[in-house]
Length: 460
Image 1 (tube, rainbow, N blue to C red):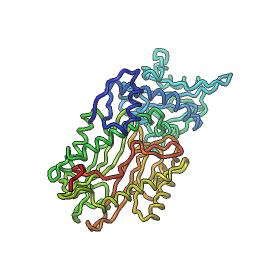
Image 2 (cartoon, helix red, strand yellow):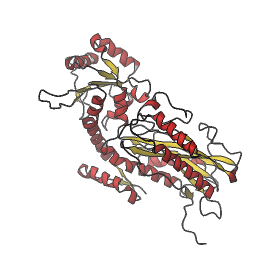
Image 3 (tube, helix red, strand yellow):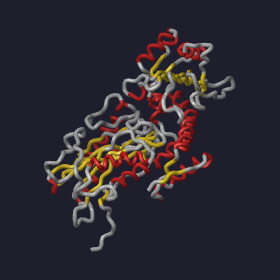
Image 4 (spheres, rainbow, N blue to C red):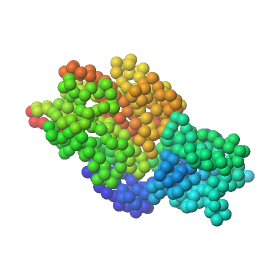
C-alpha cells in the first residue's frame, strides 16, 4: 500500500503538493526519504519565520521574544523552531526575535532572528555570541537587549498552556540576575505569541496535511481488515502492537500508544459509559463485536489523531446491523452539531456549551472533548471540553477560535441498543481545519462502519 519516494529538491514540493491534492483519487501515499523530509521541514520552518512570526508578534504587541533552553530540557516552542538536523538544543540555546519595525522611509525592516549560542541555528538564526568578547552567555544576551531597547520582552511563561510555559526556574533565575532592573519591568508573558505560533497552520503546511491524514487513515483501514484481524484468534492487544509496528516499519512516528477496544452484546463486558481510563486489554475479537481504535502518527512535524470503528460480521451476515448503523449516524450528527458552531472569536467553552445544548435538543446523548492539533497532538489553542469536564474548561477553554487553525473533532454519542440490552458509545475523532469562515475535514471522516471481512458483493 505504501511506497518510498525519492525526489530532487527542485521537484520535491511540487511532487508532494500534487500527491496531497490528489490523495482522494489514489490508494497510495508516498513516504519521503529522511533527507527529503528534512529539506521540506526546513522550507516550511523558514516560511513560518518569514511570514507568520512577524504577524503574531505585532498582533500581540511584542517587539522582542526570548526563548531559552538547555539540552534535553527543551522549551516545547523551541523544539518546533529547530532545523531538521537539530534533534535537541545544544548546551544552552537562546533564541531572540526582535521586531525592527519601519525605517525612516516607512519600509518594513522585518524581524531580526538571533541565536545567543555557540553555533548558528541552521541557516535561520544567526549566531550573535562572540565568546572571546563576552565569555558569559547571559551578559551577551543582555548586551543584545540593551542595544535594541525593546519596550515589551516576551518570555515563555503560562498558567494555561504547558506548551507556552517552557522557561525553566533555573534559566529564569539566572537571566534575572543579569538583566538590569529597567528591563525587568518590561518582561511579559509571551503566551499568546507562543500559542499563536503553535496553533497556526500555514498554507504550505495545509498543502501537506491532507496527505498526512490520508496516510493515517490508510493505516487504520489496513489494521481494521482481515489482513490483520482473524476473529476468534486475534486480540485487541495484538492489533495495538500491529499498529505500533506498522508505524515503525513505515519510518514514521507516533505521539501516543494506540488503543483498540471492543463493545459487544455480553452484559458482563466492559462498560464504556463508566470510564475511559480502565479499558481492558488482550480481549479476543469475536464475530458480532464492534471494535474501535484511537490512533495517530507524526510525520513532517505534524500529527494526526483519529478514532474509527469496524464491525466483525457474524456467520451469515453481509452488513453491519441496522441498529448499529443508526447509532453511528448519531455520532456523525454530533460531529456536525459541533462544527456548525465554529465561528471566529468564539471560545472553546462557548463552542462546547452551544453544541451540547443543540445535541440535547436533538435527543443525542453526547460528550465532547475536542482539541487543537498540529505540531503537538493535544495542541495549544481553544480546548473544547474534556471528557470529564462537560461544563467548560477554565483557562484553555476560554481561548478564542482563530483562523487557520486545526482541530481533532473528538466526541462520543451514547446510544441504547435494544437487542444488546445496553448502551454503546460511538467514539469518533477526525482532524479538520478552520480557515476563519468555514470548517472542513482535512481528509474527510468515517461515515460508514468498516466490516471484517470487507463487503465483497455477495450473491444471494
